Image (tube, rainbow, N blue to C red; front, side, top):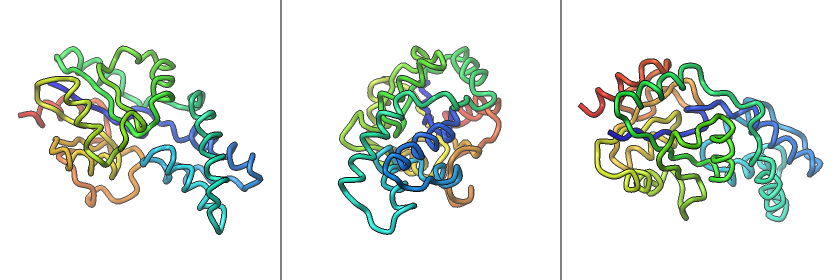
Length: 216
């Protein structure tokens, strides 16, 4: 039994750190900052898209050279941006319960792989997930199903459940034809009923039972 997780907005609330890093990058360009709500709404399609959305939010015209500078600066900030990041309540107990029940765990995120490994180490999770694929591990990222397929292939045979929090995760699971459990307290941008999912949950204590039900 294999269960694969998204990271930002699913296992961890990293939006405060991402917001702070983004505003630091904007300030270096002499640009105004964005609100926490804006930054949160920009998360989900990878770091490159996050930076483009930052620039678009505070300027009338995009400047490719500025975007390139901002992306390089954001990557440097992002690698160690975890001081404000928190694990969602109940996650660690749910992971322990899943592991005790025989589930093997993987990670499929659009977060770049270096900050992914940094934040996993920060929380003592470096050995929790057997396979980790980041947003720059392959030439494509979610919602393309290839990253999720890569995790599944590396983990080997067995039924699979994918757990995420967003429209991007839902589209990825649908494209990969994998059962999807939607954590409703993350970074989704649209109403729950508009996001394809097999089960939804707002309390991590419910996930072990949901995962078992999804594999029948």
